[in-house]
Length: 366
Image 1 (cartoon, rainbow, N blue to C red):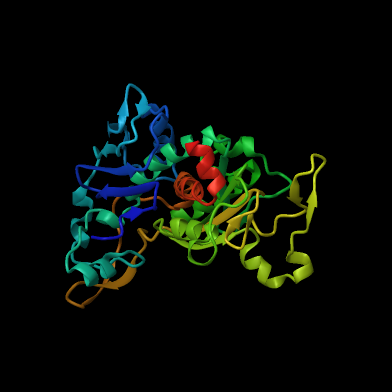
Image 2: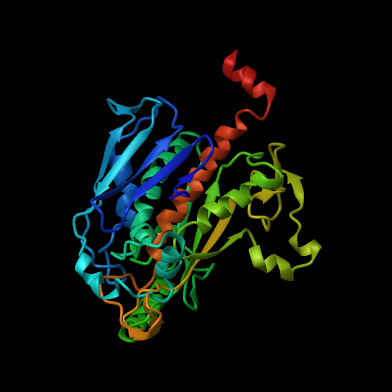
């Protein structure tokens, strides 16, 4: 299977299946000298771990990180870093009734059409557990960004019809509710909405927003290696993501040029800044020094217990009720995945950008 590797200089390869023995990632391109421990990885994995609320799958996995290579005495050596998380609570029998069935909204049919075989236990490589490797790599990328003063703040922006209020927005509240919404009023409304959907054996979609601050101007390239294009690819590669916006996104199609253009000025220190940020921190495919704002739209969880029409691998029309342990929505656990893929993309862009100017090379090698 191709397509499990992402990045150019800072490169990750995820591996493993939902109901296999383990999952993980190999990270190539991490510079030597970065302080890194299992605990650094675990903080990120704990943010995506299942079983933490009524709105996440009750699969009881500790998701404990184990660094296998690339770190010596707490410091990266510059060699490939391999990180593994063992599966300990996989109930493969939950999927025995769908081994020959194509579940609506899943990759069962397309996977079979491509390979002629599929791992029906929880979706195999198409499972949300594949994101464990991404999140582990994101922890490393975020630590690199932290050394450079670049920060990422990510949260659930909306669930179904309920959107956070800008007037009530409180970033300190993100971790105070199980839905990771920086608006406790909206979180309570969303919880009631989800409870009603769960009674109907249904699920909801949602939007995750990521704000990246202190990114220097000039990251990314024009044409095919635009920073927004690479961020969009990275985030739309996350299972369940069906749309990505940068800045005003689709709203900008309804604005005029005067409304949408961010006018430049200088601040009190003489630095060039923008008066607004409709561009979401990226112009011409390159970062402009403003906060980068990304939104990812997650579709409703396709695994629902309500009866649905489908077909089996013999082409027979049947009905199906999906059993097992599933999230009624993806967005809250997608928060750290979106953040991780954004961090990985930014680190790769920073490393590529190091060769953009002769002066930078002279500063490095003088």
